[in-house]
Length: 325
Image 1 (cartoon, rainbow, N blue to C red):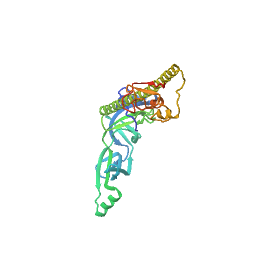
Image 2 (image 1 turned 180 degrees about the horizontal axis):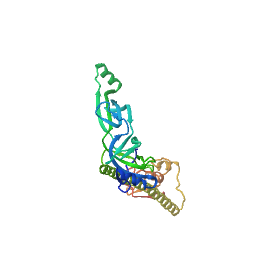
Image 3 (image 1 turned 90 degrees about the vertical axis):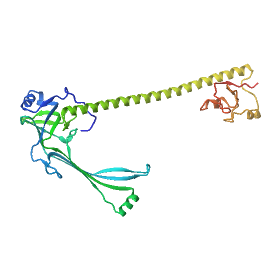
Image 4 (image 1 turned 60 degrees about the horizontal axis):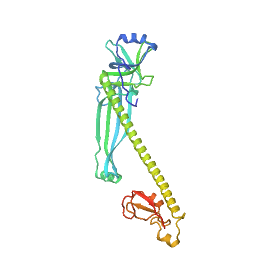
């Protein structure tokens, strides 16, 4: 089973010894089943065991053979050779097996390949390196791929290994004890380490995932706060510019009424002389302070990306209307 690590606790997964009392406990348990329990016992095959293909003295109940090819591939972006790997052959074999307790009481292990945890040992590992000729080397540089070789590994769960199992423990109608994947969705474990080590590993993994979740939440909150602050600043600038525009129009209207006219008078020649240096279509109608330059219309001033005078690059503190008398 793959997924997030599960924190196993003594309360959720009580530890039982494989002996004659285990059957008595399950007989008085509702449904003759413990949904999550921990047992430890020695591995013994229920029939003929598997023999290693490379070490004939090794026998086991689970066997995994993996053949992988390693290549070097030229990366044109980084200008380096990078390692590439692909699986050429993968074979898994199993035979029924049981866990044997102190007084020859046995518990049959079901669906062992669905279990998480380290439950096999490496019995063989060998790398077969490829020898190259001159033509091969030239072809590799032209194709951008170099074959390094093949790595073959064999892993086995050997007979006699002490195995820790965490899962659903049930008593069958024929009186046999079975350990199987939990029906409530909890994680199924088989490990060659003892229960305390397995418990420590799961607690460490759970702590790491919690720290990662908290860190991700903090980063997410920081990003949301930054986006919210940027959005607020944008709205604030828009509101200030709108207020500034209204104030400018109010001052301009007050000045026009005080001068006894609604709009400035003048011909095309005056408009051309006083045209905004940016849009060249509107008259210059504002004074930039503190520098005092008169060079643009108020619409172009509001479009400035930075509040700096286009003539002297001095910061603009405020803008007042320009009245033509």
